[in-house]
Image (cartoon, rainbow, N blue to C red):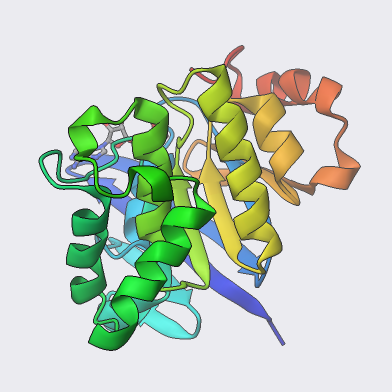
Length: 242
Ligand code: ADP
């Protein structure tokens, strides 16, 4: 009956004796943009790393596009684009060279790589700088290149972990535009952020992670942006998200 592309059931993740995720349930329908809020240390990155097949659950079920984690990790990875606050790019290579490396990693057909790289670099506004090495890029340009890499293999799901960290206002506004575009293209997006206003503006749905579970979960239409800070404080017991 579920049409969710991301299905998480009773997810537990423990580090040593420290339970971080404590039976978390979360289903995300295909095409939805979900903003995940939560205090520092509440487990947002841990959840995203598990969804990205970079960390294993202690127990519970995680399924993406019908594939189970951790058993079917490579099928899951093929459907995912991941952007974290660290761009994880090769500094001494150009944008094109970086993307060529990932095109091979994603197994894109050799004859299509060049065209695909041009298309994504145009999409993120970096085509004119395609042959400059990444160390000459601003932080905002590096983040856009990280998004180009994440959408290179046209994944159904984008996982974004605090993508606005370290961006100035202009770079953040460009990223807003870009995320709206990729969301409109029908992708499912799960984004963590500390920026309540931005998270509200972009998302179809807002969830708050607190004490190891989804403690708040509403469609954005049902939540006034102005009331979100007070709601956040109510749910988490903390004033700011930082
Ligand atoms: P958030 O992204 O919400 O700030 P994290 O997922 O980064 O939270 O961290 C949640 C908790 O898990 C923190 O207490 C953190 O110290 C702990 N943690 C995260 N990764 C590890 C790890 N590899 N080993 C031990 N503890 C970890």
